[in-house]
Length: 181
Image (cartoon, rainbow, N blue to C red; front, side, top):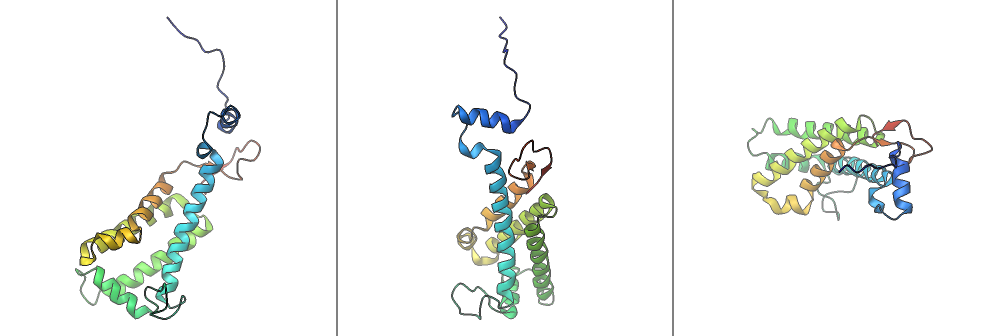
C-alpha cells in the first residue's frame, strides 16, 4: 500500500517555518531569525573576548591588582605565557606571547567586522582549544579552564564555523542572498 501526500512542500524554508509557527508546530528556537541572532551573538562575543584579553595585556582595563584585571601589563602576560607553556625555552616565550596577541587581535577584529566568519571561527576554535589544553596540562589543572569556560568558547567557535549560511537581513522578503553572520 502506498501513501500519497497531495500537499506540496513550500519551496521557501522561511515560509514553511512561518506556516508551522502559525500552527504552533515549531519552537521559537527553530526560527531562522533565532539562528541568525544566535550566530551573531556568538561571533560578537568571541570578538569581544579576544579584544578584551588583548586590552588587558596592555593595561587598558587598569593596572595589576585592579578588580577583574588578569594581567594589567605586558610583563605579567609574558610570564603567564611561560607558565602555561613550560616546554618552551625562555627565549621563545616572548615570541609566543606576541604571536598569541597578534593572532587574537586579528581574530577579534575580523570576527567583529564579519569577514570570512567561518574561517576565522575555525581558527578561533583551534586557538582556544590549544590554549585550553596548555592550561590543563601546564600544572594549572582543569578547574581554571572550566571556570573560564575556555572549552565552551572553543566549542562555540567551532560550532560557528560549522553553522550553515543564514539569510542576512533577518529574512527580509524573499531572502535570496545568504551570508554567514
